[in-house]
Amino acid sequence: MTSDTQPIPFLDALRRIEELTRRIRQGGLAHFDSLEADMAEVREIRSVLAQRIAGIRRARG
Image 1 (cartoon, rainbow, N blue to C red):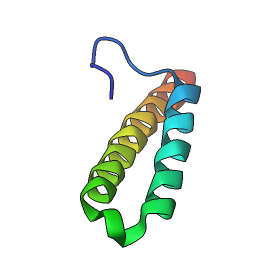
Image 2: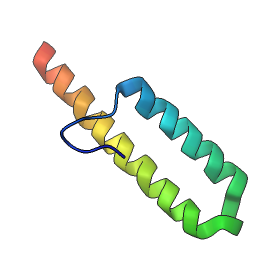
Image 3: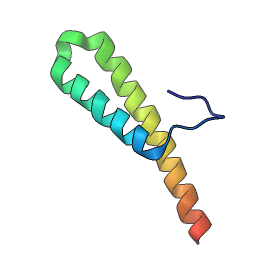
């Protein structure tokens, strides 16, 4: 992921989620260790994006 000082661009974040989702589907339970890490990264990215969207909504009133 990226540091807090330089956030990942929104579309890049969505593409990363898509890539991780593909890896999760392809790997399945056979690759549990990487599956768990991939899922954690997806959760982290989604949380950051949700916070950004909430901030935009607040700013727009």
